[in-house]
Length: 617
Image (cartoon, rainbow, N blue to C red):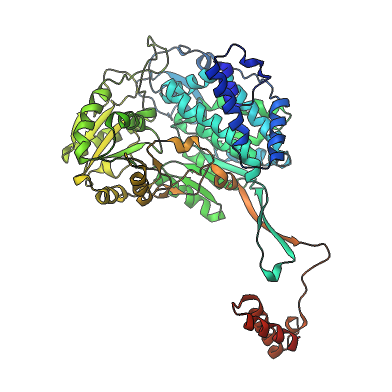
C-alpha cells in the first residue's frame, strides 16, 4: 500500500498506521524503520537527533502544476512527426521535443546561448551564498519534501519519464524513482557525518597542533546530464549538490528536454516551501553551444559530466584553460560472467535484466555476456524463447495502446542506425543472430527489436564499442577456463562495472578481483547502485572521479586542510639556531640532531640527538 511505501522510505507517522496491516507487513515496516536509523555508523546522540527530526519535523506537502501530457497517459494529441529532429532551421532558437515511442510532438524549449547560460549561472552563484549558510537539518527538510512529493506522485513521474524517453513505467520506477529515493534516504541518513571535519594524526614534532580536513562547498556545480534516465540523472546531482551547500546548474540532454520542466518545478517548489531562494537550482536547455557555455562559465566551479568518451574529452578541454576540476562518467562495456557451475534458470533473469532494462540504454548495463562453454547451449535454449516473447511497444496507455510492454523505444534516433551497423558488422564477421537484429518495422516509433548474438569475437566492432541498445552479446569462454575468461573480459578499453556469477562465491570473488573495473558485483547485478554509500565510477575510457558515497559527496566540496593550536597559548616557535640570521654550522648540527631525535629507530641515536640539540642550542 502507499502507507507501507511511505513507512519503508521515511519515518512513519504515529504507529496506528499499522492497524489492520498484516503481521508480516508490520514486521517488514518496523525492520525497515529500525534499519533507517540503526544501520548508520554514527554516535547514539546523532541517531537520536535524527530520530527526533524525522518524527516531529514533518515535511510539508507541496503542489506542483501538471500539464495534460504530464498527468494523463493519453494526454498528447497529434499525428506522428515524419522526421523528428531536435533542431530545425525554421526555429533556430528552440529545441524540439517528441515522444520517441509515438513520434508525437511534445513542444519546444529554449536553445540557450552563452549569454543566457552565464546569466542563470550568475543567479545560481548569488543564491548559493545564502544556501551555503543553511543547516543540515534545513537541507534534509528540503530533500524530505522532494521525497514526499515523489512518493505521492510516482506514476506521474514514471509517465513523464516514459513519454520523454520511451521506457516502460516499471523501468522508470526501478531506474528513476527508486534510485532517487534511495539517494535521498542515504544522503539524509549519512551525509552530515560524511561531511564532518576529518581529524588527522600529527607527528611528535607537531604534537601541539590539531589537524583536520574540512569539506567546503565548491560554490556552483555544473552538471551535464545524459538522456537515458532523465529524472534520476538530473535529481542525482541536485541532491548531493544541495546537501553539500552548493548551487546546481544542470544542462539536460536535448533528447529529454521536455520532462526537465516538470522535474525542475518539483525541486524549486520544495525550496520555496521552506523559504529558500529557488535560484540555487537552475536548468539549462539547448544544444552543444549551451553545454560548452556551462563548462566555460566563470560562475561555475566544477563540472560533472556523464556521456561519451568523445564528448568527455571536449569537456576536459573546455575545463583546461581555467584549470576547472571535472568528474567524467563515460559509459562502459560491462561484462557479466556465467561460470560453468551456475544454475541456468537462476541466472537467465539477470541476463535479461542486465541487457534489456531501459532498452539497454544503461551506463552499467550488460554489454558483454561471457558464458562458459559447457553451459552455453543450455543457456541459449533457455534465454532465446524468453527474448523472442518480449513485448515491445508504446509504454503509456496512449494512441490505442495499453502500455503493457517489456521493452520500450530508443531515445536518440541516430542510435538505431549505429546499433544496426554494429549488428551487421558482427554477423558479417561470423556472429550468430538468434533473434532481432533490426529496427522494429511493425511499430511507428524509434524501436529496435530485442536481439541476441552469440559467437562474438574480439575483431567485431560490437565487442569494443558501446552499444547502448537492446542487444545481448554472448562471448563463449573456451574450455571453461577462468584464466581465459579474465583475459577476454579485460581486453576492453572501458572499465565501469562488472558482475560475476558462480556456484562458488569464493571463485566468483576471485574472478571479480581480477577484473579491471570501478565496480564489481558478485552473484548479482546492478545492486551496487541501490547501495548509495558506494562510490559510482570507472577506469580507463569509462572516466574518472566518483559520485555517490562519501567519496561522491565530498567531491562536491573543496577539501581544505586546517591546522590549529591544540592547547591555547602553546604555539610553534623557531629555535634560535635555525632562525634568521642563521649561523650555518650550528644550524646544520642542530637540524641533524633534531632529525635523529624525531626519526631514528635506535634509542641510542635518539639520545645522541638530544645531546646534539643541547650542544647546538
